[in-house]
Image 1 (cartoon, one colour):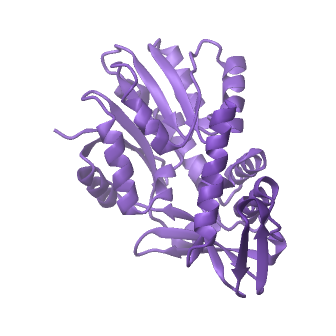
Image 2: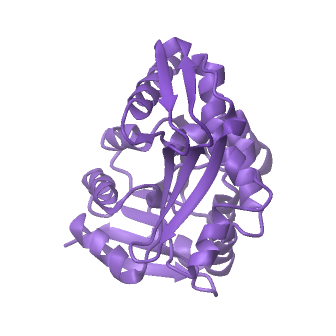
Length: 324
């Protein structure tokens, strides 16, 4: 990453932290959970028995890998596989192996906000799959979307896994899908994971494990503020709290101040006051069913062409094309 890019990311962090902690009610974006420590915590979360999402999507790929890659490029003319929010690429490697084994002509372009995640994935793939041509990029989804139009006319498969779309409430999800649609040529496709509605307790457990790893992951945004913006948050004075509304399908994460306190953030020249039990909203994790996904697609100028599910119907990956 260039020093210029680093400054842009730092200024974005400063700007959004200032805006979120001076708003009422207070909020911080979940995208700032991720740094080297946050990445490791999320790896631990994905291995938790309560966190079914990763296992369900992994099962889908292991069960339907050949059908999935064939649907990407039926005429085998070649394509770019662009993954937004690539992370460690564990699930994607199943598809990459299938693509290599069936001699597809493709370039893998993993994109993530975390420099650590992208560099780790590039190094890992170079070691494990040297035949795969990889072009990694560091950036936020919406920044990358602007770049998609600048790419070649080669067919694009835009992949968003892990139900990352669930971090957006429906109006912003539609905006995001519309931007994806606008970045697509006629033959391009979107392959996207959506966590399905299910027993409310199963959802709550997934985001509030008994070992406290998810709580530490949420609190890492406070640790980052301390480290990068010279804040003095006492993370032990905040409680991680999870809610789920089965009607809307919206799970929400909060950090709740256990007492009345004041926090100083020197780099922002900001003093933040908390009342006892005042919250900071940190994350949204939206859940879906087929009707909701069809509606989101229609509102965004897209149509569902295929879907793939795990045996437990906990999770689905949908393939979208531009609507006629």
